[in-house]
Every structure is written in C-alpha cells, then in structure tokens.
Length: 162
View 1 (cartoon, rainbow, N blue to C red):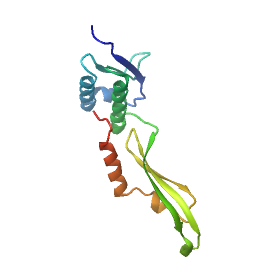
View 2: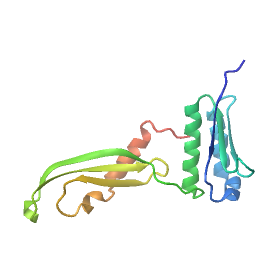
View 3: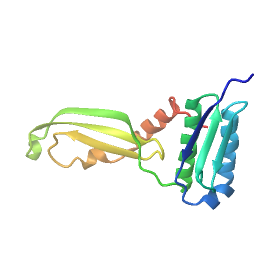
View 4: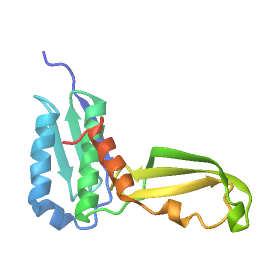
C-alpha cells in the first residue's frame, strides 16, 4: 500500500488564463513539477470552472514540497506577466555604518543601518535606511553591482528552484 500523499490547493490571481493555458514554459513547468512531486505526484492548474477557477493543485510526498512547487509556479507567472503580486521582502544583508562624523558637512555624529531586501516572488531588490542620519541617504539606498552579487549568491545558497 502506498503512503498517503500530501495535497495543497491554492487559488491564484491569473491575469490572462488563455495565454497561460497555451504557454510552453507553463507546460514545461507542470511536467517538471509533477516529476519533482514523486511517483504518485501531480501538479494541475485549473483555469476555468466554478468554484476552482484559477487554482493550482499540487499533490506529492510532503506538504512542504507541494508548497514550494506552487511558490515556484507563482514566480514563473509573475516573471511572465500573468500574475500581479505584492512584494514579500526578505532581508539579505544588513550593513551597520555605526557612528559617522558629518561635522564637515555641518552635521554631527550620526548612526544608521542600511538593510538590503529581495522580493521572494519576483526577485526585485530594495534598500531601507534606519537610524539617525544627517544629510541625504540616497547614495546608500541605490542598488549597486555589489548588491546584485549578494542577491545572486543568496539564490545559490539553499533556495529551491525547479
């Protein structure tokens, strides 16, 4: 007797269901996800029909694996422009600039921290500045080549991609 599979169903807001249904990248993803989910696994998208319109079903070895497959599918839809989303930020690196002396610019000693974030769904990068800062923090908030390298490195370390 086979062990019971985990099953996850999630509704997703697809902008253009007809295009999704005929996209070869989506078809390739479904095939790859089905293989990833295991021997009795399946990955099904339902683009029409009430009440399951625009839903995804992932059935496989574990609930975590099913959720990861659905998340990767959402990333593909976002990348292809089939789905809008709100950013889900994860911190990649925090740089503490400590105490900095701005007396030459007419300010005093200030302390601030800059955090680099990446959206889990689309990969967009964003920086935020916290603390006391005298002057314009814009130069610290611009995304640099170094920030992109950090994001690429973090992609290779433990991020699950189908």
